[in-house]
Image (cartoon, rainbow over all chains, first blue to last red; front, side, top):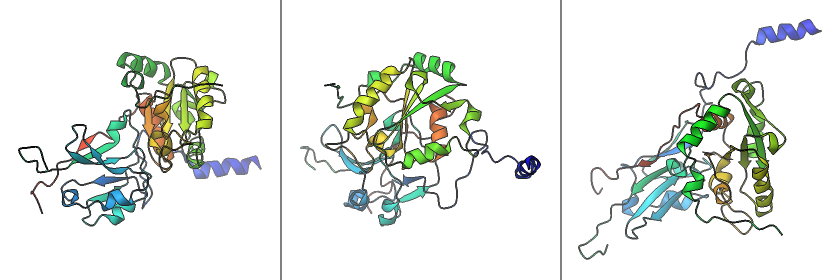
Length: 126
Length: 175
């Protein structure tokens, strides 16, 4: 009986992952995190589909502390990696990456920011 | 009646440990760390991933990381869930019972920044409102590999992959 388990263990070999010495590739179709491509994003033209569809408000429009400019923020901390924004984006500016190592020391490091270019006239009005 | 102080915005002086302190902690806990896990209103998704850390496949014992059942033996507080108001006092007492220096890790989207629950009359929405957080591990739930990376990042044994990105917008002007 004991010999059977010994043989089984010998046949199976080591099952433990080599991570972190060597990378452990994620399974196929793994949704790691959304990645935003600023050049394809059409937020300047008034497209806010991803902001509307995001349930935990990981994608949001924020007002910059100076009170004039606005920006699109993709915050990975509340993100649940559901992929709805990727499906909704009409220009393909968002895609899912299979990158799983997302831990950060400071919340700001989890943010991707797209500043909005707004035409501000000389008297300060948009 | 136990009262607790609620920080509206996390104070950078307590949320950011000094470099010297961090180096001392990494020296102390680099090869041996005991974790106390507290569920503060989690859906059990994070717990099922944390449970896998001690399985033969992930096996964090080979990295010198262990789970303990009492905060008095723990070096690191691993918190999951959207921090319900009922769990604020137990969390603070757990933190107070831990010997110094101590580390705090927010695990999952809920503990990091509210996740799908957010801030409400029942939840604080983020751990940094009551405790100084050393590392945030986002994900809903984070995979065991992400958890290992987060723990090793806390100990200074791994590199942070994500950094704040500010993207250039409309390089070719208006479409």
